Image (cartoon, rainbow, N blue to C red; front, side, top):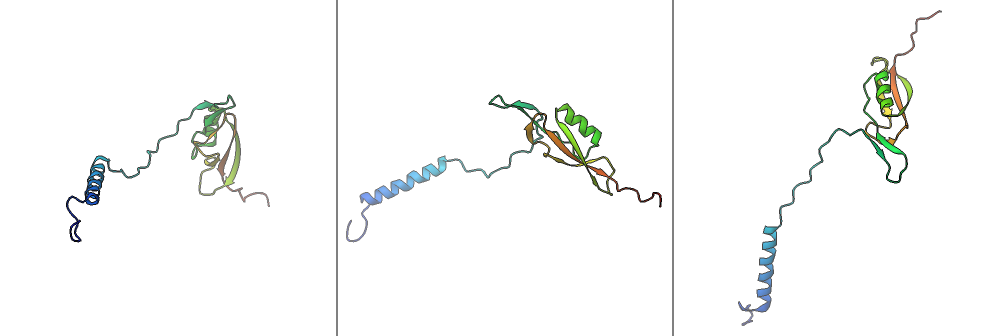
Length: 130
């Protein structure tokens, strides 16, 4: 150091300048981080899978919402599931449509599990014997 000013040959100044150059080079060589992207939504694959431990096989629940109860039963039976039907009065919908199900479509459950279908029905007619 000469009279309070840094000399161009000052080791501390040279080290700091070298560090700046190294950091600048690293910034140029590092690829820019891309923004996170959501994975593409795909239709679930409905297949049966054997558990790794040799336990029961698992299968994906097929989507049967907004279908008739008979076609829903057929699709679930083809996937080896048992079906339980619960009805709910929904005056605005045609009777016999699947309006909800448990477990949800695409869920991985043990083969031969029971799937609960909630099916629309109309209110009982008020016209009857007095």
